[in-house]
Amino acid sequence: MDTREKLIETARNLFLQNGYGNTGVAQILKTADVGSGSLYHFFPTKEDLLLAVLHKYKELLHPMVIQPVFDRVTDPIERIFGVLDGYRQMLVMMQFSMGCPIGNLALELSNSHPAARQLLAENFTGWRLAIEKCLNDAADRLPENVSAEGLAQFVLTTMEGAVMLARTYRNLEPYNNAVSQLRDYFDRLLKDGTEWSEARPAPT
Amino acid sequence: MDTREKLIETARNLFLQNGYGNTGVAQILKTADVGSGSLYHFFPTKEDLLLAVLHKYKELLHPMVIQPVFDRVTDPIERIFGVLDGYRQMLVMMQFSMGCPIGNLALELSNSHPAARQLLAENFTGWRLAIEKCLNDAADRLPENVSAEGLAQFVLTTMEGAVMLARTYRNLEPYNNAVSQLRDYFDRLLKDGTEWSEARPAPT
DNA sequence: GTCTATAACTTGATAGAC
DNA sequence: GTCTATCAAGTTATAGAC
Image (cartoon, rainbow over all chains, first blue to last red; front, side):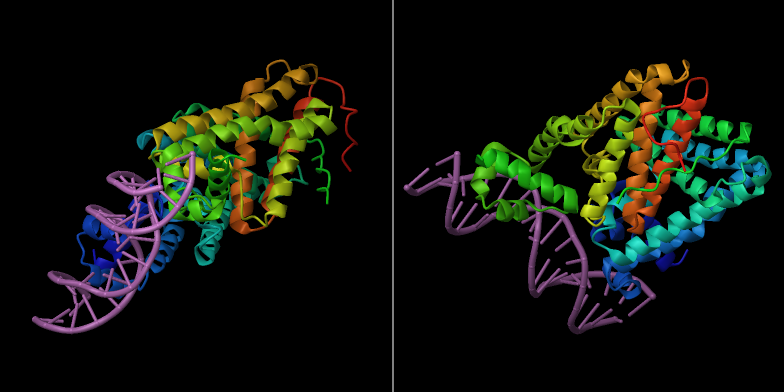
């Protein structure tokens, strides 16, 4: 693995564990066993390294998060819950020390780092599109006036909130609960052909 | 306002805007116009100040977040959506620069600061209990086998995830969407078995 | 492309006078 | 209880040799 790739990979892991601000450049260098000059040759600033990490996450979304699930599950609705189960497994495996890497960085950086914020949003959108595709593949089972985009975004919302609570409580229960509730919602959507009740317009 | 209280209030605001790690003690001192010696008289370490801030949030939950909504809305289900609307208003007012203070700190600190993590969990629990009470007050309209605790936690999950997405996209749409979906879920729950709610206008 | 050394600065925390 | 002055350590980033 070349030096540039090693730096991105190391930074990705450390940002995931400690956040961006709490990860020092020196720590990255030590962990990657790379000299200071090398880093600043590839990445003029620490933020440039951050942006490279966020690009990397975009590249990893399908091979790491989506495709493995799609390979072993065919039903489009079950694929969605398969992806959610992947996050559950990660929480357990990492003993709640890591959540969704994008969610972590989103809250830390969306105020202060506009370029990073943009890439984080693109990561969210990529995730949502993958779920959206599943919903479109199951369109015949969903009420006609259900918005695939809106529902896919709601799945993302649920996942991110659930990961946050599970990590805070250091307990899987909030995550399992959220997935159960979402499953119940899906059951009710799939079950009856009744009208999607459009929510009231937001107050101004 | 005494110095101790002023320090807590200042730190609370700065942590909210910049996070814990990115807020320097010097910055707190300058903003609060307080000398270094005073701070360390009340709070031996920066973390002690953080814990005081988290205690403050627990105290503020009802007077600031819950009670104002309960005072102007009586229907228990509408109270829940009233609380959610409060967060929507905050996102707009603060132009997405601030989300849920607890959620922000939860992701930043739950790995590295166990004492803070515990207090963050207590804050979440307090919020959930307020929603849970609403659900119990509306128990006659909900299916018997619905767990008020589980559903209340799902509301919290949705709110936190929705705030995260809205801040990342710097757009209210993900938040409105999540609330709409949650409303639709509630409609399907309420409709299922019991009478139609007269507390709010029928969906258009 | 990589190394060493270091500049310029900020951090959290402390000591002691008053 | 508050002030001033200061500490040691850590931060990002740079310069110049190889």
